[in-house]
Image (cartoon, rainbow, N blue to C red):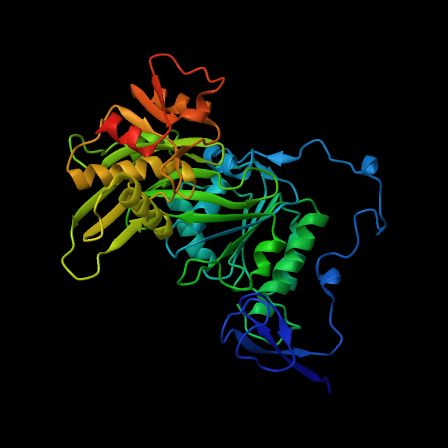
Length: 456
């Protein structure tokens, strides 16, 4: 009779131990160890599951000059926004993880690839839905292709066997938390099952030079469910962001070995599927308020794409003892730092006021170049003076009240001029060797006070 070995695995970082521990010594998370049982009976190894050795039958080191790239290294999906996020198309042999909140549109995007790649064979493995449910969604999305193969299966060995038999051009597994390895006794979705199943699928994908997409769940905190090592095993990590009650979705690359990280693609969810938004700046500014205090426009850089976004601020006297500081779309710590600079350097008494900051359009910004626009928006609302609506702001604010240089200023200004703005406030240090676009006045500022005087 086969023996069963018991061990404990951390759900956060994947560390294994022979006994349960309350706190993980690697990632310092509490109560993250779960029991895992594994049979010691002879089973197929991950190498057997994934197809064994390389195509030429030899497992040996080879010089770089002997590696054959083939006639095609990327597959264009037909969705320009999707290809932009992927770095120019689907890299052959790449393993991609896409995650997001329930109902955000992950399965819709994966199914829609069948409409844009009708000449490619796609194996769609569904572990959460029946093939009838997937077909109903495909009909709604106007996907009618016999080369879209549906396979309702959760056994990793069966998935790899079907992939080896059908030889698809693209493999989609929806979702990785539902598949399992039969030689591992833990339940599907556990640390060991997710890790080993993803490893087997990734090995098959790379050995057969076939791109694969693994759909993943997210936790309440918004991170990908399962061990953190899952993100290290794949080549690309994509997050689908946005409110499912609103139409616009943002596909963001958090990791990309074949393209720019933090690149975004903007889509609009409609009845017939996801529709690309070619110019997201127009969308984010379409409902912009004019003549209202606390509103500014900044130019953020998401990957290689400049995006104009409206920042809204509301400053009101505090109703309770402790003033509130709330930021939506921007880090809370960044807002607190800017408020400290405004109080110390510019004399704005904000200690007894509630401050609310919002990035319109549902986009999340995390680069320092948005500091100037956010600080001016707060000052505009505090003084109840509308900011100049024809001016866009770009710049990082330091603790001394100075405005620091930012990268890719020429690319940002080109987008500002394209949207019809008349003036742009930028850091003085970014003007060296800069040729501004025509019909756009570019003014350099050294201090935050200069920017406030210019637009308020």
